[in-house]
Image (cartoon, rainbow, N blue to C red; front, side, top):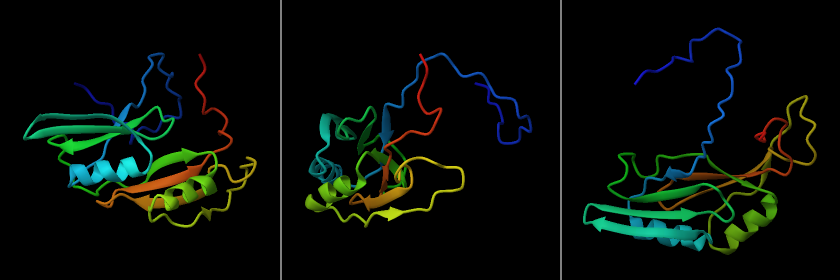
Length: 159
């Protein structure tokens, strides 16, 4: 397999976008206790897609946030990452106050909504992209709610 070192490239040329559909489907979340993690994510109201026990050494649980095209999975024997080592997993929400209230009502320790100042030139309406709240799962993996009501130009794929 070959690689390209894009970090040292000095060219300002824009690479042609690929025409191959690729969707980020699943993100692996490292946990120490599969059943505890399953209960936690179910308590968020996430859909349980599968709980597959293959052997004493391999178990995979897959769950999906409401209306998300990307799922998470965790389990036993699926990753060498340390439990709690993920940080800033973004969950885009249309109404961060409602999302925060929903999580809090489910017993999640979620921060207050914090609004960041918009940099010059960002004339998006409201607080799209600049309002955040965060929480952690029982292992310490960090999740970040981000309010997105209007997408930045160029953030939709053209067919």
